[in-house]
Length: 203
Image (cartoon, rainbow, N blue to C red; front, side, top):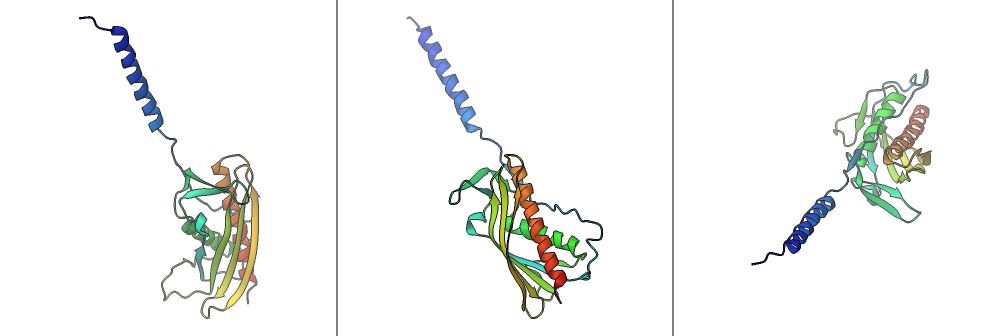
């Protein structure tokens, strides 16, 4: 009985090659996770505010549906978006935005009495800050853009004291998501400063 060793070797080589290819195709790139963070660098005397000790409620924060997802959304054009499965938020973007805004306002207004929505019904606040996010994304190696309408209410009566539509942008230095998220944190800082200044001028 003759054995075709050449055919058998070819078959074994083919099987080994397929196994290697399946292993390579089965490995995908790791998913990276990001957080917004405070970027404030206060100037001398900036924390000395006549509003010291205020009780401020932050929230609710509303996001457009297309941004309310774990994946980081960037713009390719005015009408085209990229939803990246491998670059995601480490926590809800709504919660992250609300938390960092509260931290920023705490520093800018020199008060620890910040309450993140929803707070207990018995909580007494002086002002409530509500933010409707219209746009909050950008392009790596381009710029990050934050467009919002924020409203400041009197804490007890819920009277509208201030309402503004504002847009901020910051450049992103390099073509990666770390730089983009940093720029997004910085435009959130810009919004925080505007809100803090508005609160300082309220009667």
